[in-house]
Image (cartoon, rainbow, N blue to C red; front, side, top):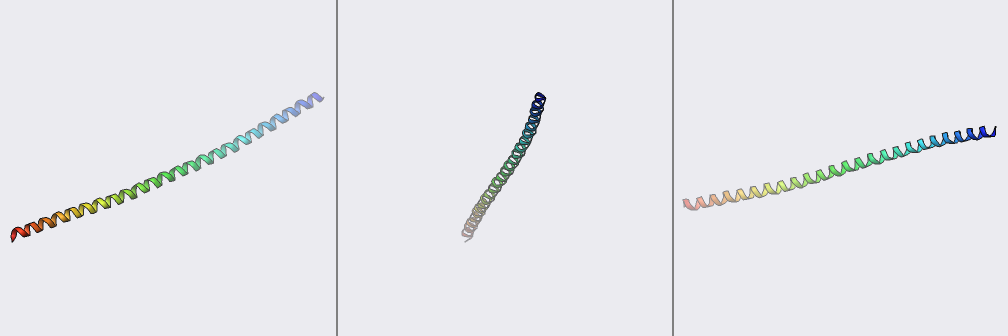
Amino acid sequence: MLGGLGKLAAEGLAHRTEKATEGAVHAVEEVVKEVVEHAKETGEKAIADAIKKAQESGDKKMKEVTETVTNTVTNAITHAAESLGKLGQ
């Protein structure tokens, strides 16, 4: 009789241990899932920020180039007009 109770107790303990292990595994899976999702969001934000900064830098550089070209063309036209004016005198 005692042997049967011991076996029953061992089976009960094994069953509870198995359920506790399954619960722990599930909890760990949820934590890993949350960590991966957070890392993904952080990575996406970092990429978006980097792209935004690159665009802003590109926009600034494009404005500088446009101003330089405009000034160069304006100076060339002014110089040419002055030279033509001197030739006409």
